[in-house]
Length: 87
Image (tube, rainbow, N blue to C red; front, top):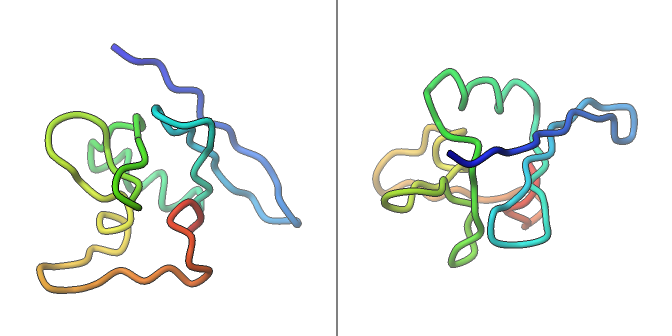
């Protein structure tokens, strides 16, 4: 079992969650409600950066952004600031 330390902090007066990536010295920044949604869906908080996407570690390649946005087949996820490391 892998232990992940998720950090809740304030950036520019906004509460955010930082989830470390398992394969890089970087973290993903996201809204606490989005993080809570993923955990309620049973998504592991062990994430990695792969082929330009943040994905759930383990079997297969499940994009965290696609899960948060509930993107269906054929739908594209575009990042407002261009970075897959911020939500």
